[in-house]
Image 1 (cartoon, rainbow, N blue to C red):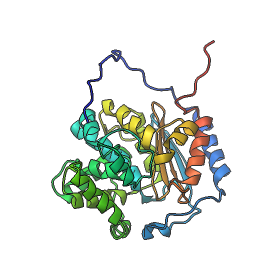
Image 2: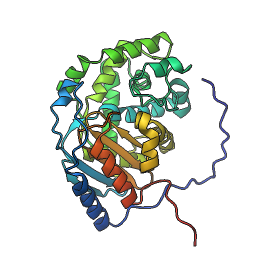
Image 3: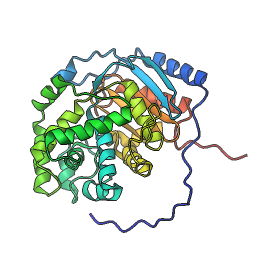
Length: 334
């Protein structure tokens, strides 16, 4: 997958996106209003193909907004922990960009949307480069195979350390979720071996599958997701700790892939409705990033047919409009 060099025609100073969040009182009131609006929404179903996730309460609902200045606005079950699942793909891709550079990451992983479900084998066979982006399972396991470290433990520690820098606290794995997913991940193991046959896995495929399963089992909360999103919105600096989680130059590359592939085959609809990069997880989490403003984390286990939280999508769309987050919104000049 060769690419012609991209001309470096950037201005000496690049402007960041879209200003600031509204005043604190307005943000707090709007987060509360959105939460109350969708609290009793009764749509979707809790994931049951991973037994450890099937026991989640369909009534759980948490929301948190984190601004790039370190302001937090949370409500409901925003501190309840759950498995990060596919949202981990975003932050492992950030780690690989940091380790290899964004051009090498693109060469090995791809950055185009598949337009097909997250676990599609057909997408691998139809695409000459096999891995199309790091946010579907095939590309995600290839991404994990590129993480620094030679053993499974070394690679997993690299991932946990990286995600913890984004969250601003040490994250841990849920052993029950890991065991449950390990017992049900035959399809992922098959995908990893298929990619290995095409030369698109960069370590032992079984090792990569195991580490990928571990990373999906790391526990986070809606508050964590908001802070992790705000770190990407803040040029890679965690607004709560001041720690640089990723070089600023890579943030826009990570967010570009997130915008086009974060919600799988529904990514276009998501961008049309919400106007922001976002990533969902099958345990009910969604992280959304408004560059220059902050991050939004939501948690609600009932999912739609594509595996995305129903309440999470609805309140994110509401807050994107209410808080003026949508990247595509403009007004005529005076």
